[in-house]
Image 1 (cartoon, rainbow, N blue to C red):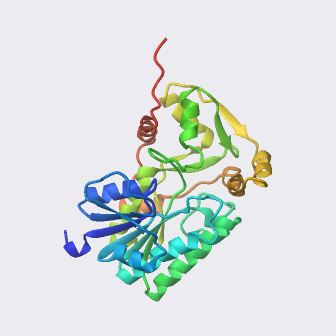
Image 2: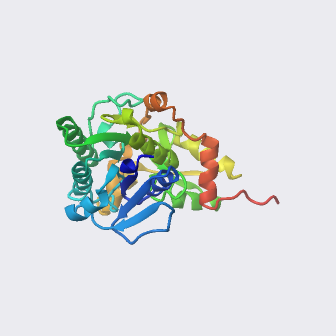
Image 3: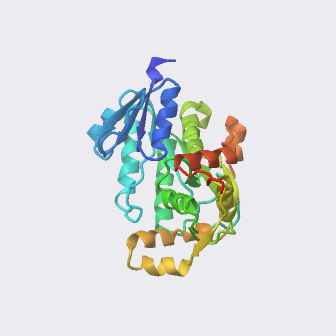
Length: 319
């Protein structure tokens, strides 16, 4: 491997940044994994760096000599994005530009807004219908304007809602879901569980970002990363239940209740703002990525089994 292209920097050590670091290190890269909090567990080939990406001096140090910079940052407070998300995003982008590195961004689907038709393709117009979506759209436009000016070379990977091992911030399949499932209780779901929805398996998302960072033909555009499940939410719940030897029990949270609570609880209000994603078909077309790079998502049964194992959900003992 060319030593000049050996360093890869990842901003954000959450549910995608950590597996991405492990995958890159497994490929022989020297990886710098950056977050504000104290370093996490030791990983061979991975150097932890603690600091603030909005501090240009620190960000420059983190990116010095890197050929690729990955942005997996996300504000920890879901209801406090304004004044927080943009400085994180732009701090990572500008540091990558100063280092002359490729900038690979993990993004979501908020900028598309309420679906007028599905599946979403990469050229679907951005018509955000939420404050979070408008902010994501603004950042996306600014990013590609910087690319067109030649300031920085970019590749963007957009993913739908996550499930997978060590994925505590999933919208639906979060630790509480697996606790309820393991105890045989009804699982709480928001929105309409009968609507088709795309769900991304976290390791597939990390693997997809690694592809965007290591393939030259990935630069200059948005890619929809491989999707593991194109099912209704109920159908995916049933897959988890069946694999764990249990019956699926669902308790639907009324949308009006979330919106009412959201008036006084900002976090719930932020969740309620995005309910439209589960009130109509919300499906992603990932065929362009698969056709270009030959990357297929993890088979769903394998992804479900590995996720259950990671949360300690085992089949009940026979009576």
